[in-house]
Image (cartoon, rainbow, N blue to C red; front, side, top):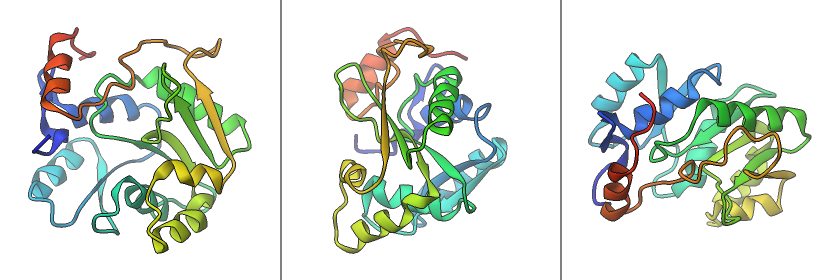
Amino acid sequence: MGEDKAWLTLGGRPMIEHVLAAAQPVVDRLAVVINASNPKAEAYRHLAARWDAEVLHDLHEHRGPLGGIHTALVNCGAGESALVLACDLPFLTSEFLAWLCQKHQSGAAQATVPLDQSNRLQPLVAVYDRSCLPAIEEMLATDQLKVDRLYERITTQFIELGESDCPTTDERLFSNLNSPEDYQSAIRRAPPRK
């Protein structure tokens, strides 16, 4: 994208605020993982203060999402889980996230990962138990950074939007913005909830 996607505006506010708004009613604590040298670190601190969230400095340089997941889990207490969300998913809803967390709590898996309408894994809209840390640390130590490889090492529950109790089948739910074209397409769609 060429810039920090979290701060692109959609519906009058930065995308990251759409994600925080969806997560806030569902979780006990909010945290935003950023690189310590992020040029917008001060803006993230102000954002976190407005949302009563923590800013966690990523423990890993250039380790991608797996490093961010590791950072989130290290900051969880024993027996806790982290709902991990990418910053560029402005169409997430609290109802869907509550359902995802309920599915995780009612199962025995270490991670609960949804599949989108095309059966692609959505590892950055997922719940991970702190018990995933040993597998993640082994992967980081051996430069295996693809998050989907984690699911071969832990017990993972995969869920589909088509499940009968799923609160939504909105195809925009997992629409993330990876290019200027994706961003323009999102702007043309109906704005997300306010």
